[in-house]
Amino acid sequence: MDLLDFDQAELYFDEPLAQDVARLLEAAADKYGSEEAESLLLRASLLAPQHLVVLVALYRYYFYQHRFEDALLVGECTLAVVGRRLEFPESWMYVREANLGAGVMRSMGLVRFYLMVLKATGYINLRLGYFETGQAMLEKLVELDSHDRIGGKALLEVLYQTMNESNIERGTRWTN
Image (spheres, rainbow, N blue to C red):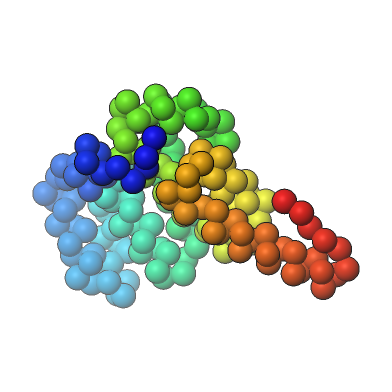
């Protein structure tokens, strides 16, 4: 399966969005950098807590504000929302290739989105120092995305290199 085949894929931002929620997101974008932006995004989230556009907007806001704990919570919520839509196991740890195949029959775009969120959430875990969880998430991504269309291998290589350099300084060697 080619995760870069966008021809028939419906993407997360193609989902209809209620006008009042769209206005809140637009107002948050206009007021980005102010305290009011977060309030507007949270109001949108209350009105449409499982809408992927709202979740992405909230995640990006927290990420670019370097509020990684908040971004992590939104990422984990997004994995759960998309996983339920795709009828994946409750935890990303139990997702297998067969789940992806069944998910593709529902929505190739959502499968690709799920994997991108898995990558982003793995990365955030690493940024926060939760190395075991971040590594496990990226390894799961690479396992599921054998052609590396989402780009998890590069992040893992950087992680492995960093861990090896750290261990060499302490006189030990870490292997993957």
